Amino acid sequence: MPIKLLTDEVASQIAAGEVIERPASVLKELMENSIDAGATSITILIHGSGQQLIEVTDDGTGISTGEMELAVTRHATSKLSSAEDLFNIQTLGFRGEALASIGSISHLSISSRVAQSSVGTKIIVEGGRIISSLPIVQTQGTTIRVENLFFNVPARLKFLKKDFTEKQANLGLLTRYSLAYPEIQIKVYVDDRPIIQTSGSGDRREVIGNLFEPELARQMIIADGLEHGIKLEGFISPISITRSNRKEITFFVNGRWVQDTTLSAAVLQAYHTYLMVGRYPMAVLFLTLPPEDIDVNVHPAKAEVRFRSPEHVFSIIQRSIRKALLSSSPVPELQSANTFWQSNSVNQKLMDPAWEMAGDLNKHTLSANNDQRIIQNSTQNGSHPQGFGGIPLLRLVGQVGAAYLVAEGPDGLYLIDQHAAHERILYEQYIRQKDNRLVSQQLLEPVTVQLTVAQTEMMAKQLPILGHLGFNVEEFGTNAFLIRAIPAIFIGLQPETALKVLVEDFEEDESPLQQEVEAKIIARVCKRAAIKAGQLLSNEEQKQLLADLESCFSPRTCPHGRPTMIHLSVDLLERQFGRKGAR
Image (tube, rainbow, N blue to C red; front, side, top):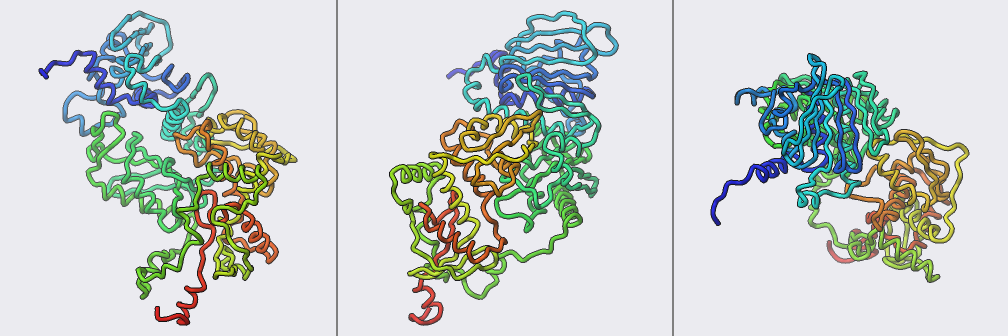
């Protein structure tokens, strides 16, 4: 094919695709422009997922009339004048691409006035072409309105995720920038509802309490340090507050939100031996270092950076967090189980295959959704729930380590994880009750629960499902909900704990409309309500737990697929004691 020069329109759309990937990309660019303009107040309006409308208004320095058309021209910027400036960047924006990129794929209008002028100017851009420019009356500052994003790039529209997911991306970004700039008053309205309102007082702990909850803000630990000219400050969560993923580990480098696996790894290394496997801390950390020691011109969206001395950055993060953790709640170092077993003289490879899980877990483990359907069918047909991986009648021997039950069966010894077993019992009881008559327990006094901005959006979508599952929950002000009743089966669980667990582990692509959402919700609440490792049980409680587990349809795994028991066969025991041949 012959080589052709691309038209300006196609070239602009290609360039825009590198900078603007989704509505959250627009928000990021406009927020950073307002911050660079010295704004002390920023108001943001979002309709739908942001594809319909994003409007950002600030009280910054504004754009003069003579520079308005230049502002929407590609590679026009006030922040660079030479190539050398790329290695001394002290502003968030510098590439001169954002407004031009946004204007090429949307209906864009910019209204602005500088302090030295008595009138402002409004410019309208559609698909990269300036439609009009006219004088207007307005206060000092800038209002940028972006409508019909990707209207002329239908291929890009197809790759946008569900509205729910895009909203979560928007709110996640706005939450991070609210934390990073507590001195700026930020107001966010989504579909005319106030979602974020910060005071601009400069108190970051106050912002944490506003966006998350006051109790979390009170418990967050200050982490700070200064090494090799690198300054670290911010907040980390105590070891008692964890999340199921890394999404709430946030880094700002010289005021810029960045996503860097090395930085996250330094945080996790600092928490090593303190957290259970699969659990992650919360962290909001801010690195400040000389501009010449960092390269921000790595990615068009400016989401990645490179450090001149990454080992020094890793070191200050790890040391500062470790020091903060030790000073807030000293925990003795424990030798990990892996180290212990590796140092043992017995070769692990000689582990006898008779040390087996109680049944073929790969064969019998069910997804929460399939598990729910099979249990419901067996209940409706009146059949005994004993099904996949049924267990024999067991004779209780006792409790070990306040975490495991020891029981004897006709074919050997069973070690039962009391927490996983109770999860399974609660889950199946709940499933059976749900399709008959689920009993709700009214609370003597309604309980108010404060959620994060992102969790509020999730919870609002789930209210009808929660009502079907025996919860009576209603919205109660900004980012708050009122619990009036919970399922009677969970009456021992704190209502606020039950509600928070419903949203804390949802991934961004999960939607309340998915078929298996009820099963996931039930499994999560059961996990939190189940008895815990370390909880001493009376002899009667142990016997009841065994009896309830024996009556379960799928007693060998918890609803999440973890084994509830390990089986030590008689054959294994005889060989271990030398009663049946040499080992």
